[in-house]
Length: 105
Image (cartoon, rainbow, N blue to C red):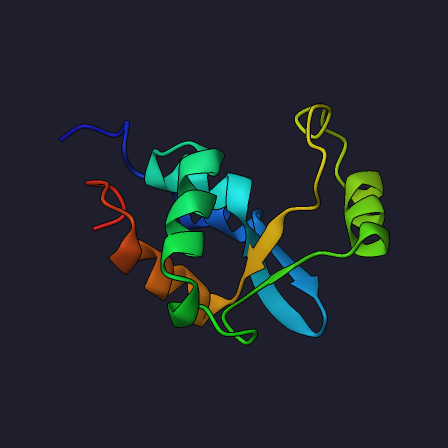
């Protein structure tokens, strides 16, 4: 059994943030989990935007984004111009249905 595609609960738990009184995961973390580029993930969301109401997904505002960057000591935010999209549990499930990746399925 290959362990390359297994994401232990701890790794996933560390990618869950509490924003706007909701547990959410960010687009770039989800794209990594699903094995697709963040750009591609967001393109699929835009193509299926009617499936992502506000209680499924929202974009962080600048203040939320800055707060998050100060909490996470990582350089991966460096090239990012726009704040990330945050997906609630329902949004994560919907995302797996619109992404055409083996991991998402």
